[in-house]
Image (cartoon, rainbow, N blue to C red; front, side, top):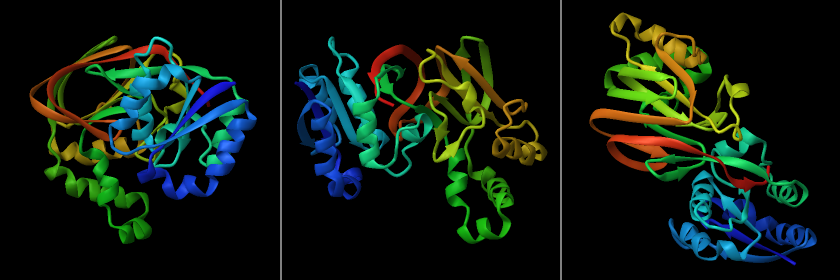
Length: 293
């Protein structure tokens, strides 16, 4: 009989998984698995557990948010005999699951794991640290959370433009040199991300049809600070419209990216702090793991 390790993050998954746990285990057992359940005890024990025992299982399934999935992938990535990975999304945004069609309902997600064949999946590395969907810098995405709800309801899309313009003086641009497969970009940037996702921060990317998790490529999106203050509104409008042809937005596909800045800058990696760095490299491992979708 095949062996399956079900890892549950109680912080993000308790309320959604607990009512369905018996049914989920039953689905896996009827699918031919001998199931072991592990309840996570800390932020890092998932990675350590998968690194230690992952080769003993045919499949490892993580139930939690995108951070839980990141920990699971990080533990499995360097194993010689990697288990296949499944995901039962139970976090707040679940960008990864929504990007690639993994069901949000726990029972349906479990059925997907026993019914479908695993797919070779790309995994990216930020300065050697694995990430499954995004590494980013800058504070531009905070605009949507800072916009008052009443303003959103009364003005709709215009509310984001209004609040974004108002917050621009407080958003610090970062001076960067970025080298990628297709060239070099220099300038001051409000925001940038290297990703392998069709959805970030709860928002779908308009270029999602050009994005694949199996093509060995990452996507680079940079938002450049206008040279003239008068162009701030134009830049913000391009961001809200996701106009990748704008002079203020760089969009490209790449296998390798190198960045250098004058001072250390904070990065987030799959929603977690990625460190303050002035230089580094982002790369991709094509078909690094097999995952159920």
